[in-house]
Length: 112
Length: 149
Image (cartoon, rainbow over all chains, first blue to last red; front, side):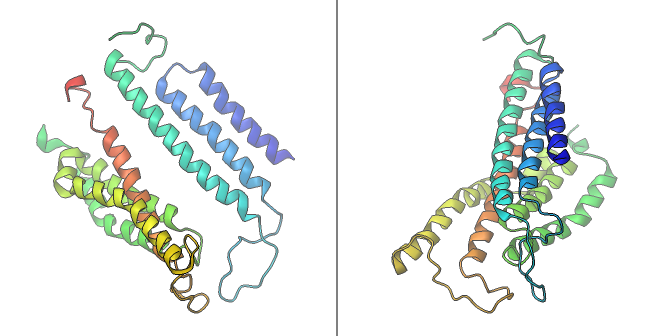
């Protein structure tokens, strides 16, 4: 149970950064931390104590394995997160292009 | 300014020395995706990091000279089409999408997975090139030139 709570704490750290930071790059990093926390939690759902990784190899006995399904899902989630981060970075670049700053308190007026 | 592109000579030398090892490791992970942890996505990320080390160490103009970006774009775009063609091959042979038409081979051999190996290679090349080209598109904008570049 404690590991899930730690994941939630990591998620809250990301949320804290997302809400309180003014720098756009730090906000993007904070959203990444939130994503990592969620991914870690999903992987930990499939974890079993003392289990081996879910791949058969030569000379390896069949034993209790961790659940491979969350790992496959997290792989997809990582890709989507990557796309989201790339889009956020592209938006940040466009904003810097217009305003010459990453400070969101100075990005207020719409300029053409 | 044009000759001072990129990072210091230390970074350039180290990245030039290590580049082949990065690509070898990426291809190893792609080719052994069905036998060990890894596969198309993980190996593709390693390949993208190899390309990115060129871009970071030498700067954008030199990398543009070394890499044929148009060809890379074409290869990246043809990845899904190849994947679809392999899937339709199974459809033509047995009536099921992505049906394995290759032999299964011996267990734990490199040729033991049928279609998974070519699909892993396609995915690896596609992932590696798209990650690299995404960062390449992000570096297109020059902060000194502003909107015009």
